[in-house]
Image 1 (spheres, rainbow, N blue to C red):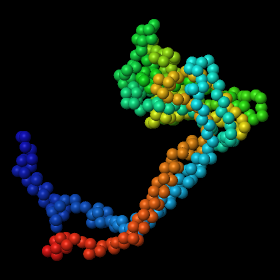
Image 2: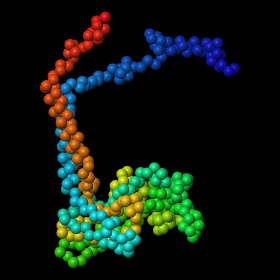
Image 3: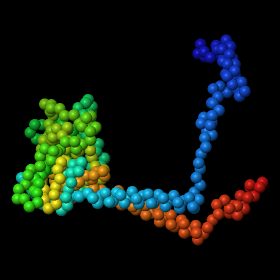
Image 4: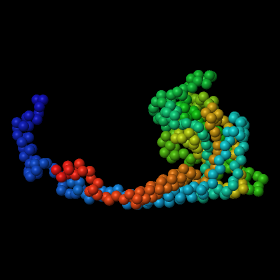
Amino acid sequence: DGLPWLASVASGELAEDTTNREMEDPENNVPKLPHDKKWKQQQLPAWQPIATPRNTVITLALTGSLLLIIGSILVASNNQITQIVERYDNRCSLNATRCNISMSINEDMENSGNPLHFSYGLTNYFQTFRRYVKSRSDWQLADVDGTLETCDPLEKYDNGTTGSRTLYPCGLVANSYFNDTFKAFYCPPNSGTCELLTGDDWKSTDISWQSDRDKKFKARPLASDETNVGPQGFPLPPVDNENFIVWMRVAGLPTFRKLYSTVGRSFQKGGEVRVEITNNYPVSSFDGTKSIILEEVNWMYGKNDFLGILYLLWGCLCLISAVAFAVYQHVHPRVIGDPDLIPAVAKEVATT
């Protein structure tokens, strides 16, 4: 009973099945033989390039030329972007009521299809520290059932008056939220008045990823056993606040900038943008700095010197390598497939 296949052998079913398979391919006695086509028999034509000195020099020269062209385009486009950077942590007192920083417009800043970007920058801030990155609850942020244990060590907080309560949002990333605020005023050239940028001229929406807004961050009211005031001592914004969403997408390098708002207008040369700052976020404990950045945006997004320079360096390296290979081949030529270069031992093995 435990070996049902023996019954099949005894009844002749196995022998009948073997006969049927032989009838399918009586010549080779192989069932379901693949079709005799080049694709299925792996007989397609193939190109196997040989790295001859000539081919190597041509490939390196073409690759280097292409990289130089791309790098030149990137550098030229990058140089057309006007950017203003002003450090303010050393010019504004911490927790001061108000601090004004002036950004002089030395070149026209055009809003040609893409709004200008106003960002804040931090240095020496390592957001990729493993414990820091893991300390968040994506379930809580998306308002779905899930654990809060991933927020360790900031799942709960006791402020000394209300007792220990669950933090909403919890975790180190959320509770280290950058809480400096900015207002901008534009002073046209040769004008004694300045206008506050509002509406589309100073817009803090559509600055985060669409997928984050739609799926990952869903706000809800605080529960009775929750609090949104963590160790920093100020209420955190709703989790669907876009400045909060931008902060929650941690940076990969210790020097980074995060978009604060878009500016939907142009600025004339000779004008001035005055930024009113509430300087709340301390950076002296980790020897960091804070700055504000106003920049134009084109097809390259923002100003980035690294990418164009990288293409130019690799292009030059490829061209130098091509010249070096060409000179070496000219000074010490070598015939491809020269039988005189085959070792004597290999010749003896081949003849025997």
